[in-house]
Length: 456
Picture 1 (tube, helix red, strand yellow):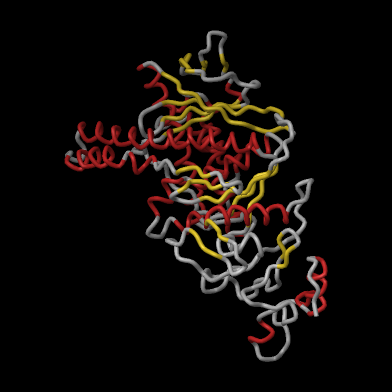
Picture 2: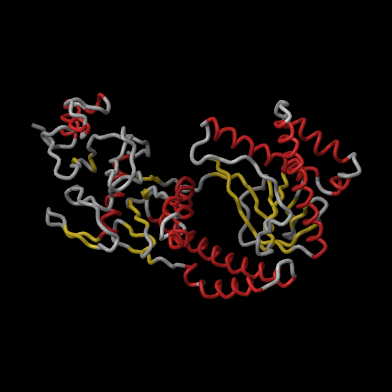
């Protein structure tokens, strides 16, 4: 399968090239803001939505002929067109979010770009005729030949390149290339991963990876730099230098964390045929008292690396529902116990099994992932066990049926297979199921027979 990859390298423009890049950044920002302003004015006047072609004609072609925007002709026209393409993409995402076509969080309408933003970016496509020279330099139209620090070779000719200036004042060239998958030889091992704070990752085979806590280790230096920044007068040159120093310290932490996660995710994908993780609500955990530690861990970035590397190298990757009680379920007998506090790291099950909290959760994540994916990687069962309402907020119409993990029937607490399979049957007092027709007693018996347990 053909995939698109992005390779990012550090570039070192000369002082003259930095001036040209700053001019190009500013022109792209002005075109973006002009297009956004025209569409907002049209909406306020009750006029129809300005199409992409008309917008490009008014803010680029016609604007170059005016005295106020004549300097737009000093930069590459492809950069200006790509700025409008970013605006159109932002509007498209906003409209799709309103209509429900786009899943996830609601997307806000596009905002004006500020020249005071420390991060700037421009994009060149093949129409701009950028070129990687034989001497390793990157030739950009109306900017010149940039020195690039190559850490690896590109697998194919890039389709586009984005020049980025980050908050620390560094310049990067991000290439988009199209290449084929690099399927790794198959292996027999499969693993479940439980993510945490004390241990960043606990594997179902008992392996524990200690959390590096890069932000906590750099806290003293960051505190000193931020205190020095707060003493500088606003608008002064010393304050601008202090802002860059703080940004560089944060960039060092982020780069170190990203490098470490790349190495760990590559090792996990290389050594296992299938990897299963729990779908954590990082945004929700980021609003708790553990917010700093959660953001320092970087779970979302790590799971994203596992997902795209599994797709690229021919591995299986699965996410287990966040409401699946992996911590409270016994990996030996599948009994779901009461809610446990965070300080309880080991516990005993009435069946006689002694569990390490994180290792047991990783085993349950692996079992749940294997139950949801067959050997070809296709999803074979739609639902997961909903968490009790005392532990997490769930929809009242959530599935109430039991669930089997590797052929073992999961019992809700002390629930009997002979009892009513749906708690709503007794909750409404009517003796009738308030969920769906598939929660009947016949369905309960069929599920029990499929799990190897005989129903009465």
